[in-house]
Image 1 (cartoon, rainbow, N blue to C red):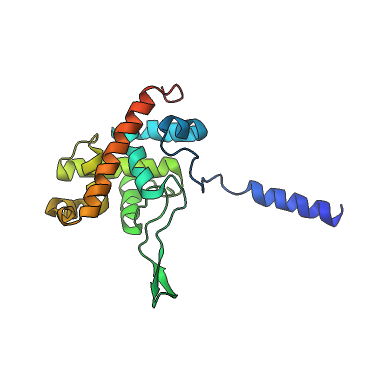
Image 2 (image 1 turned 45 degrees about the vertical axis):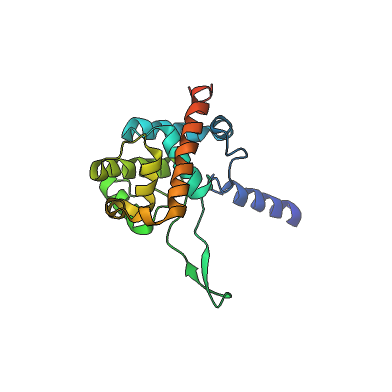
Length: 196
């Protein structure tokens, strides 16, 4: 076998072992039907979360949009000292759900999903269902209330109960946008053949 052919075979093998994770956003983030048509495996993940946790798909999708823009390996930006020296990331948030390390570990322990990965859409949506159910239990927020679920998702259960979000005008604006996007996605999914 020639060196060129051998190199091409090795390159193909390495490329095929990529893990199948979505590292880019779907093309049309403002159209829920286009998202699930482009990424059919999202439908299975969203339906499983609805079935297991009762969280509507449009609420989950609006939260994922805000947290990661549907980029499976999304991370927070780096912090810099003096504007040039990297000091690490702003937080341990990672993946579709931008779950923090400690919260993700708690989820895995409570659900028994030891091998769950934050960059897997099914695991990420399941995490969100688990977290939003805890929010309903601890803070009384209905699962369909995307705006307040997002506030609790961002601030944590204790922060939400203390009302820490009230002093953050930017967060209130973003939560309103999550609520509006959730309603937009809901209407779009109702007419989407791919989702029915």
